[in-house]
Length: 485
Picture (cartoon, rainbow, N blue to C red):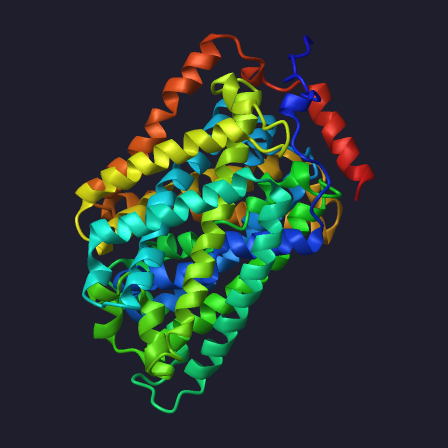
């Protein structure tokens, strides 16, 4: 059997990120910051309510169960190799190079779209501190958000050590504020709607406009971002284990936060308040005023701003590390694989992301209201999340298929749960396609289709990435994995 050529290793300074600077605590913080609990609640609650009404807690619960399968998949796949491209590299090895490239491309386009919608809640919330009428002024909101985005670009370009230090400070303040307002909401004297366990039941979706999968697509967006820990694996101590554990711990924490705040929103706010288009980007501000009227209630704004800043940073890390890995492999232009000689960050990839994002900010003006921009962005990102998460879930089952039945824990966490997660994501993708409008589909799938251009171009150039890994290589990976158990 002829052995397929492997992608060359890059140990030269211009292709090496700063290794071993992050520990487990840093990885957990980055995982939580990547999900951005305050931002997700502020920017997605109205969209979730529009899809499933009071069924938000159930959508988050069942999507969360499936998402844990993908978290476990990433944890085990990370033991194959430390690669900043994460699923881009792992899916190639386990399934096929074309699927690996599309996995990386899905992350890139979802991150770029996210740069647009991430600016909306922070801009709207900040302006709302001074004028409620201007909080829905789309051009002004976009300009304020763009300024914040540029500040985050500068922070990310300064190095991962600086970024993580800032993230620890911001995330601790954000989580403290969220826990404070969660307590105020739960123990609030006046509840508009009585709590019901039915909100967690599958039967609640029988009366919702979007059905279960419409709500699950939004819920997937809530959870998205924890996998930044995987994209930081080349810069993490114990690179094949720590990032996976950090992702697991982080997703547990945010899962609980999401459930608490979705229930709190259901009981404290009326259906009209939640679905009001003027509240689409700052539902937490409305909740804050409901449980603590006046300037005290506006403290929640700080959590949203910090969360948005944090998630812009972590998303920048994800997309720039993925672009860096793809440039290093020359599945995209080689210049993307260059790093800054002093800060050891992918400076070219960061600059490219900055330019494209600013152009997308301008283009988003054509999508209508702020509510429309958020809805189109969340739905299109949900489709891309389904693609690369489902591929990762399937990849771990295929790669470790001979180890799955060697122990009960292997069967559950390496086989069954990731497979359920992969199937869930794939079925959700198929189910929601007919329910989305033309804008969602053009943004979500049209952006994916663009990836076929560089994929076939570099494949035609005989790039080593597109050669299937040899049988010997696959066996060596599994043997190393067994030694590290």
